[in-house]
Structure formats: structure tokens, C-alpha cells
Image (cartoon, rainbow, N blue to C red; front, side, top):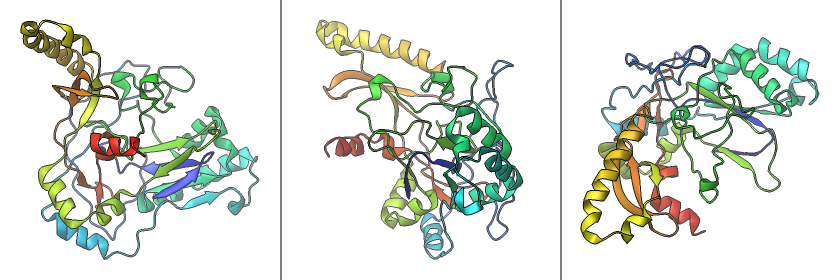
Length: 333
């Protein structure tokens, strides 16, 4: 895991895998390359919008998950997230023209590092301190933009307010102010960007550390019995909680069952017409005051995948962020 204080920029290859490449460095020839499944039908978007995020490639099932983990543990070449500093390449922090020229001239080498090392961290690059410079940076690398995987539910605003902008803010909704977003991959079930670039234009007054983790190392370091259990059972988690139904408990008891059934049907139809994957709604209680809510659960997903470019097994799951037990454990600290 790499931890750094912002401002810095991290560019991570999608351990989020997809059918469309954001760029095309060579795959490592020393590792097997997985067969990529055929793409599914993609939803349409307006002609003036960036394309939707590519579809996730779940790939074939790993025959022996423990043997795959054992082989990964024997490797000694798993360097993660090398850092490129402006001063180390002979450039001043404020030499934005020189920094842009460096990125253009070394684009393929940088992208190959992303493939081999999982991520690249840039420090002391004033080029990326503005949205304009940030866009110039990833365009110089040849990264292709797409809409946010959460685009269909409008979970994240764009930095400049332009709905077609490819630069998104973090999830900063008021309803999430007490919610700690745990480690996660950038995907929403059916859609996952091929790669992503993260930057901070305004540093936090306190804290503000940004964490990135190596999906290979997470899988490698899991207890074998836990890895086997999770992989054999798959993982299903809540992707949305709607805590708006406390008033139902105030209704006469004989009205609650038909009312709850009708509400569930209406909300289910509304959500499934909006998102790119099917969700199953369940009644429950949650939040800080155990209010009645509808919980939207994603389809069952494997937590460990073979990357279609590198052929390496890696952790590809958002349970750390979504697990109610882990969330409550964090809130208790």
C-alpha cells in the first residue's frame, strides 16, 4: 500500500479491468495473458458526451485459488507504485512546459510502468495543479476519457460543472459526510475504467492522505483459508441504502406489508431503469439511528480475478468499503 499526502498525482492501472483499453502498452511477456471475453452491448449516450465506462471483464474462473496464491507468494519482483519527481528528471517544480514535454516524450515508458507496477505517482508537478494542466497531462499520455462508472446515478459532480467533463470530484454529498470510503476498485458491477488518474487541486487543511493499494499484494497477503472461503462463496454487497422509510413504522400494522411490497416494487423499477446492473432490494434497518430503509444489493461477484493484460491474479472487490461490519468497526475508532 502506498500512502502520500496530496498534492501529488497518482495514476493507477485499472486493476479495474475492462474490454476497452485507455492506452496500449505491451503486456509483460513473462506472464500468461488471459483471454478477454467478448464485450456486451453498451448503453447509448448523447453524441456530444464521452463514451460510457467500458464493460468489466470478469474472465474465466481460477481453477485452484490456493495454488494461484502460492505462486504469487513465491514472487520477489512485485514492485508497486514507483514515484517520478520533477526534480529527479531535471525539471523545476514550476516548469509546466518542460513537464508536459517530458510526459509526451516518455508516454509509452510511463504507461508500461503502470502495467508492470500497478500505479505511478507524480510529485512536484505544477502542471497538474489546474484542471487544464491535468487534462493536458492525461491527453499527452494518450489516455482515452470515458464517463464515470457512477454517471447513471449522478453520484459525483464534475470539477467545472460541465456534465460532459471527464474530471470528476470525489463523492462529497452531505449524506456521506460521516461515511468513510474504504479501499475499493473503481467499478460498479458491470462497468470499470481501464485506468484512472487521481489528483488534488486543493489540499486538505488537516489529513488528506490518499491511499492506493496493490490488488496483487492484497490477494497474496490474505489468509489462505479466507481467500478460499471468499472465492468459493463470491461476495454480494449493498451498493445503495435508502433511509427514507421511517414513516412506514407509524402506519397501522395491517397496512405495512402491502405498503412495503408496493414501495419495494416502485423503487426497484426506478433504480433498475437508472443503473447499468440489476439490483435486488431488501428491507432492513440501518444508519446511525436504525431507521427503516431499503437496501440495494448488487449481483454476486468473484472477489479475485485474472487481469486480462498482465495475466496476474488480483483482488477486485469493494467489500472493504461496503461491509457494514467493517464500517461499524471504523466508526467505533
